[in-house]
Length: 240
Image (tube, rainbow, N blue to C red; front, top):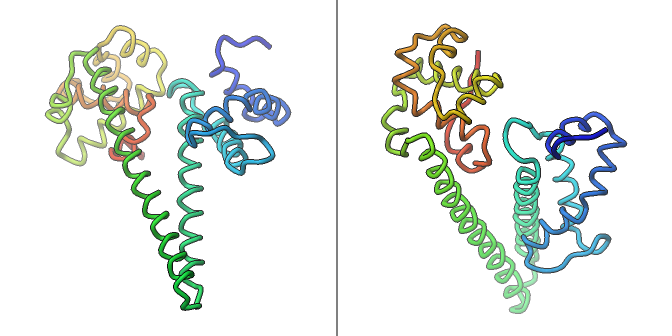
């Protein structure tokens, strides 16, 4: 079967185990490149545990991928990176626990325990710096995307709903747009919010939609894009 993009291919193989395994085998070089970029060194299947972690993460990415939320390989790269960070965090914590449980009072073993704790803290600091760096990159990318709509971060903050009921209505609108291909295409390609169509479909008054226009556009862009850290800091969920 021919596919127009890798995104469509991933969508089609989620529930077909044989095709899914073939896809994973085919993209082993991509998985290895993600690990090598993370570690800063060469890795080899059968020798490096990180590759096993990354393959599991790649499989997870396939199963969780939503074609409306951007490019699959970018999404998979983010999932692999997060799982590797989790793996190292857990490994360092376990090593530190073992070191503290040793009851021998010898100076050498005390130094070993101290070194393990130092390594764990060093990794935590690296992780914090990396997350901070990635978050800054996301914010800059988000600002540039907002600018294509003539919107600034200040505009988004200014139009953010203060009342809980209004915020819930905005979340409903955001998810309604994400689930409606026609509305999403109008927003992304023509760079405007189709207020009349949204009001008709959601039964929410157009004036409310217009007041929160910038906030709604920002919500759609974040949820469909590759803004993994921004999603964690903003609650765009909607519950009936």
